[in-house]
Image (cartoon, rainbow, N blue to C red; front, side, top):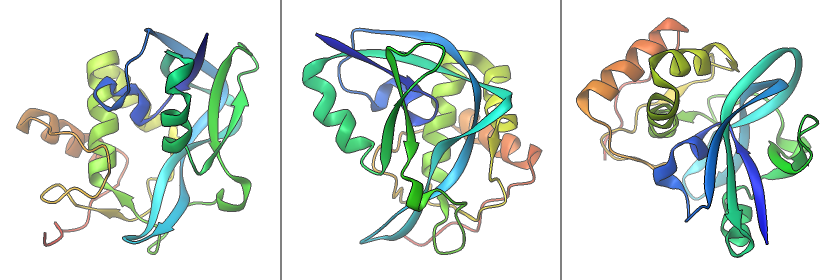
Length: 186
């Protein structure tokens, strides 16, 4: 048996995934991505991507199909999220942050630059520069503080970016008036 998930953030970066059967581009209508406060742990609070209903928006991503054996890995990865069904395709799961944590991040729940890097690397590879630009436009919450952890990534699934990718991410962040904080000490 199999299950399918709509990846709209870091799940778009195939380097962060367990073995999958297939991946196909998909546009989910009626949703907008948003940076939401999702966790507080050993390293402090964190902000993660979620979705919020928006009838005037559509977001691009990938429908990822896995064997059922991968469900525990995906469930652990999406621990702070509720699995919902896409209205346009009820066979596909979309994860939305738990209701009690569904608010914008803040200084106590910042965004990690390594998370943004990993997500945008996936969008560059799957959808090109225009797809990465669309990611920025269809994501709310760029006012949330961003911690520059590139030198010592704190994001669990952080990926190495080329210098060209880093410059492209930085330019996209400037395009939405989001400026990462100074690099953190390792």
